[in-house]
Every structure is written in structure tokens, then in C-alpha cells.
Amino acid sequence: MKNYKIAVVNGDGIGHEIVPMGVEVLEAASAKFGFKLAITSFPFGAGYYQEHGDFMAEGAMEELKSFDAILFGAVGLPAVDDTLPFKLFTNKVRTAFKQYVNYRPVKLLDGIQSPLGTKTQADIDFVVIRENNEGEFVQNGRVMYGDEPHGFATDTSLFTRVGIERIAHYSFKLARKRRSKVTNVTKSNTMINTLAYWDRVIGEVAAQYPDVEYRKMYIDAATANFVLHPEYFDVVLTTNMLGDILSDLGGAIMGSLGFGPSGNLNPERTFPSMFEPIHGSAPDIAGKGIANPIGQIWSAAIMLEHLGEQAAADAIVAAINQTTAAGVLTTDAGGTNSTKEVAQSILKFL
Ligand code: NAI
Ligand code: MG
Image (tube, rainbow, N blue to C red; front, top):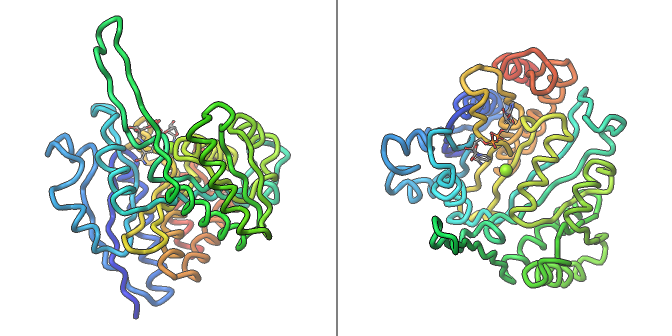
């Protein structure tokens, strides 16, 4: 029997409410589909930082390396400097473990009415592939003379050929398994160095996949098209920051940010991949038992898919759809149910 070593990091805020629901669903799936999970929890995050002065324990990255995958909630607390969670946890794991693909499906679940009104499940079914290791988020910059009239700040984005090629190849290969369409969302008309280079390298890769339809779209037009014509999209290939923003819009057109799942993938599997909902720690609703657990549970399903447990992953996604179709929803999605009731319903259908 297969046995997977899973690291679990609730993080902060609603992470403490939704990650345990993800773990319960994983345990039910493992019993049903005949594999084992060895789960170890780590108390890392902004709360850990308040007590220990860092987001993770010393040596934690080395320890995490030995796991098959990481199930993660979100990090960040109102009382902690919000420049730290990404730098000291999320981006640290994503870059150290070469999780250069951020895989973010946007799919309308059964029974959910999109805020886009007339758009149906046939229209809203695509994946945002966000470059996850470089681009605008490399944090290469400085602030000088901040309190003085001549104060200034810089952040220089970084795009490498190898970084662009690998995310492009991933996207075109993924498109072949879907509807064979890649849209490169860019802004090369104004970012004439980095994003023009991004377009050029992606264009070279696109030429190696003549069977995949390739088009380029500027981010400003793409945001409008997410709302007006989501049916244009199959695989949306974009940069770290543009993908961060667009995928929240993707969550919104699914009916709630709380529905959006993601995988931070290391496709070569030389390091563990990390699975988390697209949203943050939602301090405004933390502790109330009303957070939508679906993005988290769906992320756990994507984790099983990555580990090779396709049937279990499919069964979880089916149970999520049966739950939304039955109208068992949290308030963010227009329902009246609690976090636990939604998770219980998914467990029941599973
Ligand atoms: P957020 O995504 O936490 O919340 C935005 C809005 O969506 C809030 O009104 C929240 O209540 C709602 N929301 C989010 N997830 C929900 C769910 N599962 N169910 C119901 N409603 C949900 O973004 P915000 O407020 O900008 O950031 C809060 C904190 O999270 C910050 O400290 C930020 O840095 C951190 N953050 C962490 C991320 C990560 O760990 N990967 C990602 C994004 C933000
Ligand atoms: Mg985000």
C-alpha cells in the first residue's frame, strides 16, 4: 500500500479552520481508496513569528524537503508586518523547492450561479498558470531616504530564459491535455524589456507546439475578457504578479474567492509541491466558523492528483460538486452553512 508523507501547515486566521477540514477529507479518501497518509503538522506562520521571531523553525526547510507534499492554508495576521509572510514563508518555500508552476483552476461548480449572470459551466472552465519563482516578486530592490523629500524606492523584476521556457513548456503540455489553447497574458507594450522578452521566449516555445492555438493578450484587455468572455480561455499563461491578481478575479467569477484552489508545483518532483487555496488568512472572518473550506479541500484533491491518486482526487471534486449542487454553502457563496457543515457534506458524499 502506498504511503505518503504529508506536511500540514495551517498558517494563520481561517487556516486553522479550513486546513483541518482538508485533512479530514484526505483521511476519508485514503481509507476509501487504499493508500496511507503519514501527516505531520507544523505550527508555522505569523503567529509562530510573534512567539519565535521567524515564520518557521530553524532547519524546517531541510525537514520539509523529506515530505511528499505540503498542505498549506495561508499566512498573515493584522498585528504582524505584512511584508513578512510572503518573504519568510510562502515565497521561501515556493522558490527553495522550485515550485515554479502555480496551477490555479477556474471552474464553475455545480449549482453555482456566477456573478457574471448568463455565463455557465461551459463558459467558465480554464486554468491560470502563474509563473511562481521570478518576475515582479523577486523582491530585488530597496528604499532609500524614505522620510526625506528625495526618498525613493525600487523593485526590479527578473525574467530568465530558463524560467520563461519551463513555464511555457508546462503550459503548452497542459493545453494538449485540455482544449489545446494557450493565452499569454502580458503587458509588453509598456514593459518593453522584461515582458517583450517574455513574449519572445514564449513565442519560440509556442512554435514547438503547432497543434496548440496560441494567442497573446494584454492584461488590461484580459481582465475585461475574464468578465465579458471567460469562454475565450483554456490555459492562461502569465507572470507572477499578473497571475496573482487575475486568479483572484478567477475566484470571483466562480462565485467566491473561497472556492479557488491551487498547487505550487515542482513538476520535476525533486522537491515537495505545496497546495493551498488562492486566498489569504481572511482575518475579518477568522474564528467565526464561517470560512468557505472548498478552496482548501479542492487544493487537497489537486495534491492527490499530483501524487498519482487520480481516482481519489476525482471523487473529492465530485463530492464538492454534489455539495454545491445541494446548496450546502457558506455565506460568502450565498448560503447559510458553517465551515463544518460544508465539510461534513463533502465527507458524506465521498
Ligand atoms: P484574503 O484573501 O485573506 O481576504 C479577502 C476577502 O475574501 C476577505 O473579505 C475575506 O473574508 C474573503 N475570503 C477569503 N477567503 C475566504 C474563504 N475561504 N471563505 C470566505 N471568505 C473568504 O485577502 P486579504 O484580506 O487581502 O489578506 C489577508 C491576509 O492574508 C494578509 O495578511 C495577506 O498578506 C495574507 N495573504 C496570504 C496569502 C498566502 O498565504 N498565500 C495569500 C493572500 C493573502
Ligand atoms: Mg493572491
